Length: 467
Image (cartoon, rainbow, N blue to C red):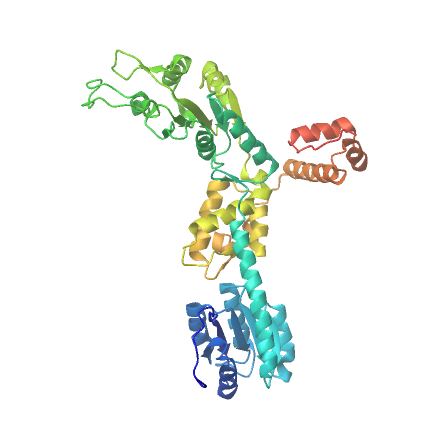
């Protein structure tokens, strides 16, 4: 029958995109609204306050903006103010400047400030629609790019993120030691992720289905530490009203992680050494020994060899624990990993209902130049703060607690500066010559042995043809 629509089950109506028109001239606003309402969900605002309320509510992909807005319609100050606010809130938003010929200079300035395109008054509807389609296409591409960027933190091992040569070597070592039961000693500054390494070893081993028991040897009072580690029998001391298993016993079949092993008192070092010799323990107050099957991973941020020299740590215990030693690099030595790790934390702390935030170019520079005395733990805390305080979808340095870039500590250390330059130039020369040490040495004006020594000193990944 003519005039009657028949349903087509294969037809699916595409969802209309939201668009916000910010225009204080009612006739132009109505013209654009009626021209676009068939293809878009059109929202309108005549001033900056209502515009930001609508924008933060609907988060449109596209905004058209008249720069001359109340309370100062005769100049562009209010327009530039709202342009800045919108792009700070979501820098992917495409803003089309609607301008008169007399304001073309300001419109071009707006383009350089981040606006996507401009259109002069009177508005040509067909031209407007073409610009909007193109803007939405670019918006979709950029949104997908940022989504993939935030999902691309795949350079990881278990929960450890890293793509730097040092971390790749550590991942390989984890796989090797996980296949055995040898004790491992993990060293590195506080906050470098020593417990994550221990957990990764456990997860990669055949013990993965058994307990992983961490204990911080520096966090438990000395008078309680023996009972905490080895357990006690009922009546072993005042307050021991029942038998209690220790942390070592709780790790049966699995992995015991002894963090800050350098803080272990000497009498307990003797008892731990005895356990490592035959893997038998006696509870405090007990008379019989228990056979245990566990794997030991220890960690410290102390210089163990200095502790040994000072008589604070037993050398024989050190050699029992350090069958394999893994030294974790400080975050400042992993410049290539910093942004990767930051993105992991951004994704972790961003609410599910929000778009995952991304880093401004300035933030990336600050992250790479900062020396990170607190290592990965400090980075995690700063990103958590940033996700909480960032007003838009872009993380700026001030969101991370840097009030200005001058706060990043560039210590006046001539020796460190020289070492940084030495590492930088040698590494670049070796890369340039595809690992040919002779050619790199020739370009640097150094001898081959000198370059080899520098490669060894800084653990530069040498793909080297010796040349």
